[in-house]
Length: 261
Image (tube, rainbow, N blue to C red; front, side, top):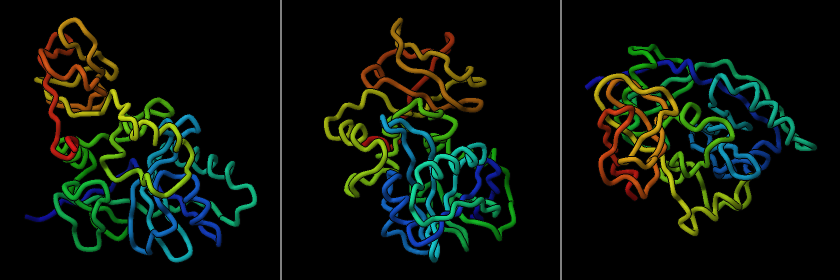
């Protein structure tokens, strides 16, 4: 089967270079940056000090630099946030205008495996011809049950574990300090995980974002982003069993194998 290739117009790049680039990012992000090799890609995030998700990032190793693959709408805000943290660090933070591509269901030639899940396919920067659009890529992602951290996570609204970063290789719990580490590590260590983003299935178009999912008369979660027949929901883990409805329609929670770890 030939892989599909889509340009991800919703993503943009930031280049962080200079002698302090890796330690600078390593001390901020949830992912290990010090050991990132040229050509390798990892998944992580920049959190707020209380530990909520601000920006999801893919980190691309480059010679003397790290390239951040981020939400296009958030690029300027992330560059400003990184500049605020820079202080005396010898780093240059600049926009990189190369396009971002995804291939699926496999890792096409010139692509690197998506660090979150093998089933997602691959990612690449520049030099590829699209054969599909980003809507098709979103349908593939949603079928696998992986949330979009930017759209589903909001800004300073959710914890990264609620967005499954711990299950999608987005947090290195062994790397030492990062912004928001204390809350994140405590949630994981003590098992204080009450909600997770999980795929929902239903008939018809998706309800408006924020619509309640009910278990009988009890609130079981809320709908995030989706398309006809399915969406991502932020669900209470103690209310997944029983009769679930949204706007009076039957809804089912599908827990993917990768999320049942």
